Length: 531
Image (cartoon, rainbow, N blue to C red; front, side, top):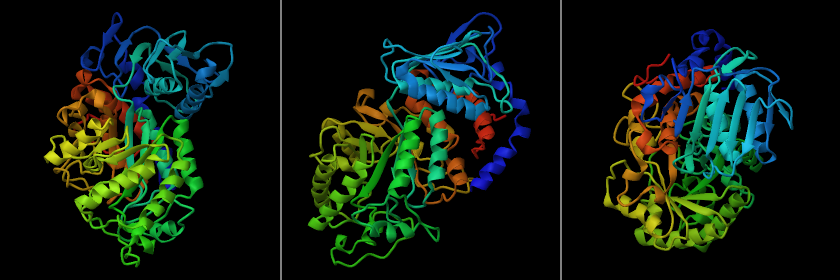
């Protein structure tokens, strides 16, 4: 897999001649400075930043010539973001920038307490330099991702002229997530880190890892080594299994944190548990291990909710996972528990949420967990039904989280499940979520218009799951996630009133050129006029 990626990168130079000046020319105007928002995209043709900022003023004035040796000067409070400026611009361009305590202020990061949004920022570029202002490292890092999209493509080490702009920006939602299913097919650390790199460019700040399912158990638990010794062996079909050691998991968590992405681990309960049942005999009512499962059907497995052995097991598992997860969230699943009666499900929900809450984490569960009326304060529900809910239960269960003092993450399957086929020609993916899901479908919905009575104030954010029944390689992940993850990022970041698919489509070719330059195997959907 890595050899294939390296080959794509070695071939990229010959393909990018036509796009070297794309970003610089895209923002050039004839005449005076123009102000626009994403709702008014035609005032500045081919603007390039995804997700669209709150406002951007572009000027035909001279931009900044970014060259080897440019100094990066940052306030001490923004040192973490400054380190990423140096690292990520070097990775993009080959230019070696220098961190400095003083000296020429060619790229500056300044703390500005007047920017009250935690990830809000200002980005100004003119001939004198590049200036980032934010009140947090997260805000400064968001500014960097916009800056990266403004830097023209070119040969490594080549001076780049960044166009003159003034950007003022902040996100609509604080939680902007992507989920990767590593349970049905296992993906090594290097693949997860590659995905993280591409998510960061789009200002995605949460990575939800679906660590367990019927097919495989992917995280080492010291108290129960058989979970990975047995449950870690299998995957869908005849694919090879695998699992993350605790050091592997910590590496992913740290790699993500350096890019201001929080890892959200999930142990799916009480259904989707056959890998555990096949590993630990005492989790089964008859005391016999279940047979390993390599299919893709759902809803047949359940833990024994009446056994104290189940809760002792969960205390160990959730306790160890929480201890090695510095982020605030712990996802406990709860979906498609068709083999668990309603009474048993409610009993289990009360017990497992108490155990999970005792770890000190904020709990997240799929919206079915809202069947319980005893959720710990602040528990978050993840809505996965359709943009137009199919059943009253999905609405009632989702609203239950809000009624009990929690919030919702919006993940409607027919819009943001990235494993759904684009169209009938898509070789990978499934179609159960209403058929095909085009990039226009992924873009064209409002998170606050799905569940009646739920507004922005009730929504923690938006997340795009990528389930792996049909995905085996990094290329598979990329072709299904990109470009639709960019649409999800804009839904989550940009104001609803400012969003416009035509404007989004005009900005996507420049992003596609960056993906091509980075060796990302994205799908060239027909809705976009790719270069």
